[in-house]
Length: 493
Ligand SMILES: [Zn+2]
Image (tube, rainbow, N blue to C red; front, side, top):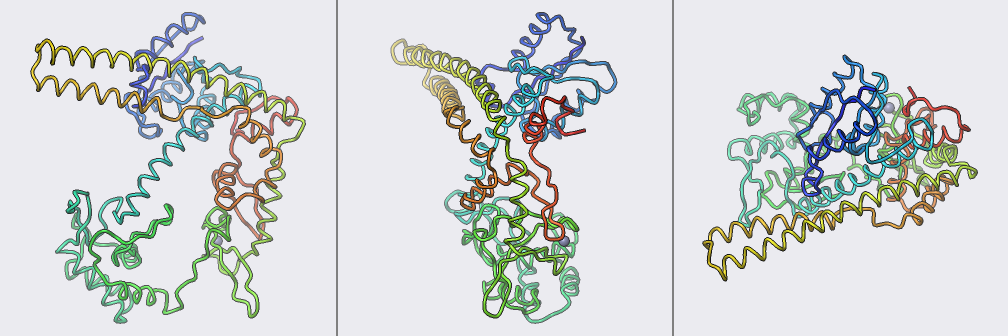
């Protein structure tokens, strides 16, 4: 059998002793043991988990397309892809080229459904790990935004500066800010159409930092962006905070422009997520637009509706849509008869993960001891033996401190510290009755649950939820339920 190897490290692992060399050696040893012919090794140097940033992965795919390769060996499945969907897609792609993916440290029987479920569970755990990290980043961004700081490239009219607190912040750009202000003033004064205002200001010198003309859509976004009135609004992060920098227009002027753009209508009532868990999750099957939630203006009572803002009039009562959504969830629920199988596979996955975890932790602890020894020797050399200068001592001890901090971070970092039995039990309940779980959960949890089950959201057509794409874990469960029939590739090709 001809095998190709794919090795990759993340920053975390440079501490954990699983360098490219280590991975490659382990894979070579594995090939010797199993009698495989290792035809090519692909070593990814970058740290990104995104496929697009991984040239060696692309080379691997190209190689498998042109040369006969039976197996692609990885050290761990998360080397390969951290996102479940990506993992499944890559596997299917390689299988199409005649190559199976095998992890040399995580054994999964390749052709039995339980083995495939285990693999999916492992990939799901890797993804969970990833999500925890992403959430931490989001929290950091949210904290910054709440302090009134802008998180990305300065919007037109602002430029970067360092404020008196030493933070990277914004200030009005003396060239462009007056032109942006002039645009708001013109619209508020009733100048129409907006496009004429844009052209007039372009003639007066309104342009991007790179000197390009401001396109109509960008111009529109400027007029709608509350940052110009000194407010930082990130809907995704649930942030609406006063900016820590000088506004370009007064709040009243900004509000007047919004009224003009809305056709002087009443300011729109924003429906809370609290009332509409499927808001921005369900989407219109005609135009792909995410549905909004809102209240109808009845004479006596108001009714909750979901609607598509493009295909007018295709509103659907909240109760009707929720009912339709629930029937999909119920159809997905795991048959009681398969609960023992699920339990077995889930516990096996946790055991496997915990073993890996404890050996990694042992390595880290050993390294921490080594750092401690070196710190002690360094102190002795400096204080008692006077063999090194203060500069050398400072530099060396700074390096050791950084190393120590890195190891300690990794030791504290996310590991499976949960009780496998409890989690498995909770999952069983959840899977056995998704509908009830969704119905009873508070809205924030409903959103998490629905996103877990249907990663793309759900399409709505004629007041009903139409067959949404479910997370691949469910495809596997369904195949097992199907009664031992042989599985196709996990994404159903
Ligand atoms: Zn639509």
